[in-house]
Amino acid sequence: MKLLLPTELAEAIRTHAQEEYPHECCGALLGREEGEQRFVAQVIRLANERTEERERRFFVSPEQVLRVERQASREGLLLLGFYHSHPDHPAIPSEYDRQHALPWYSYLIVSVRQGIPAEIRSWRLREDRSQFDEETLFQQEPSP
Image (cartoon, rainbow, N blue to C red; front, side, top):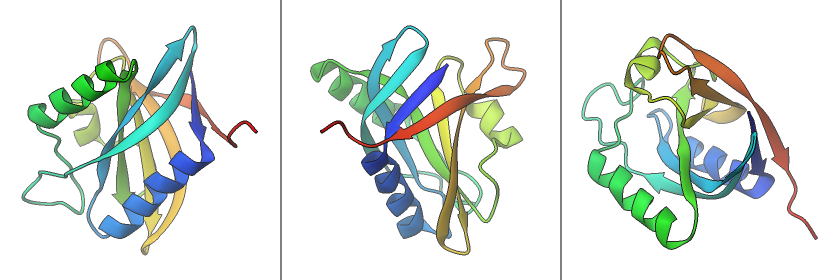
């Protein structure tokens, strides 16, 4: 699967991650899926509702998920997945991430090193929930 992320949306995610540092930020990815490609059309900031260990964990309530699913539906889009940051850790899913993820969704992770956003990578959980596989991520400039 390929995930196409416009550069301006990648920058919005990086900015969110930098603003929330040293805590994890989180948000939703809305867009379209065509065959083996996903196109992110919009990112929505979500509140990290985790009350403890916010430097290493995030939590999105079912109410927030329902709200963004409804918004996506109104706009003719799909909830493709979620993004979050890893402060001072690589953009690789943790065991906690695996335990709380669902198959089908894309999970985009941005690494933030000493307050500076670094790499962004995208992952999908296998159907048997055993592990993540990395998605090919293309950051693209908007069409003229």
